Length: 218
Image 1: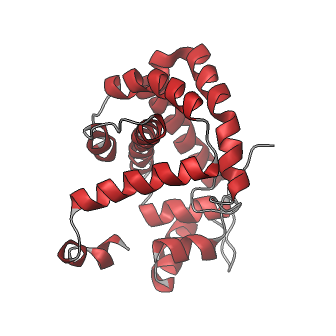
Image 2: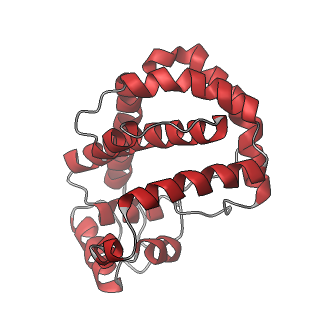
C-alpha cells in the first residue's frame, strides 16, 4: 500500500500536514470517545520520561516519533507518547522477525494462522495481491512452519517461532523502553487508562475485529 501511494502522495500534501492532521484527528476522536483528560495527563507524566530515555538503536519509527514536539493538551500528549512507545515495540518486533528470517508478509500469515485476525481483513487492509499471499504461504509451508491447504495452521515449529518472536519482542520492549517505569509504575498506567480504554471500545471507534489484533479485555 505504501508503494502504491508514494511518491505521488507528496504531490497532494506534505509530511508536515499529514503529521498535524494525524495528531489533531486522533486527539479529537479520543476526546469524543470519552477518555478521561485527567487520567491522560497523569499517564503522560509517567510515560514522558520513559519515551525520552528509550533506546532508539535500530528503531526508525520510534526515533521519528520521539523527535516530534509533544502537543500541549493532555489527550494529545498521551496519544503521541503512546504512539511513540508503540513504535518502539513495533521496531523491536520487526528486528525479532528478521532474526527468525520472517518477512513482513509472512508475519501476517503466521498471525492469521494463530487466529489473531482473518486473512481477508489483513489482505484488504495491507493490500497484498493473492499471488504474493499464496507464495508466502508456500514458503512457510516449505519451512515446516505452516500446514498446507487453503486454511493453513501453525505447525509445532511455527508455534515455537511465533512464541519466540513475541517473547523476544516483549523482553526488548521492556529492557530497552518501559523498564524505568517499574512494575508498579506500569500497573499505575494501566489502572489510570483502563476506564478510557473501555470508553474507546464502547464508542465503536475500534472494531471488535481489527488489523492490530487487539481484543477487548474480559
